[in-house]
Image 1 (spheres, rainbow, N blue to C red):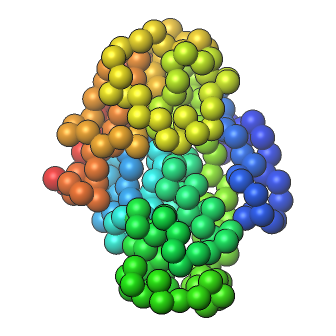
Image 2: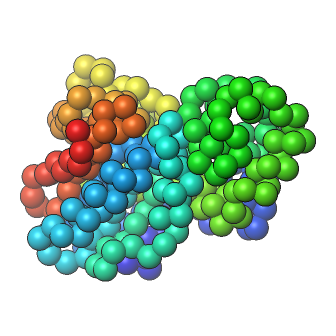
Length: 268
């Protein structure tokens, strides 16, 4: 299935952290596999393992593509373990794809220029660094110099983890559906969406509006980013972020061509 996923912009090369990720997005043309879009994991590897097992056991026919909608790291206890898991082979019959979330974007900015006083640290970054054994809490990080922090990062975070984060695409356009971290601006065509919107938008709470130009009839925009009590379908939009690190509940949606979306949950 990887051969079916084609990048719109190629990776720039080995200097993965020298600039913002060069990958804009990915396309998947029909016929589509069964797609399972998973909400924000935020370091809850235990919940993702359970969700992945549920997906692997699901009776949907054919190939399965698990799409993580970004924010797999920060806040929760095991960011390092989460990336390790995603670098390992997927369950038989499944392929994984992880999208860039605002927390991965903040982490990449921090890792290019580590600062013990960076705002990211109080928004979940400290928990990510703790999962690598870099420092136990915010106070311990504040006690480090920039040089000492950079040396600890170099010693504790594997290069393949950095490469993984740097290669994450912003979105997946799969047949009629558009999957991204934070949703879209309905006033802009799909092919002109702003990077900041895709990572930071909170428009899911806005009143209903016509879908953006470029979204096919029957197509859905599937997102996470904005925690809600239960996964929700609102006209052409789906949100599956149920605040896993706070609630202990991880949610996903199954998309099969010609069938209604089906929500899945683990925990909570």
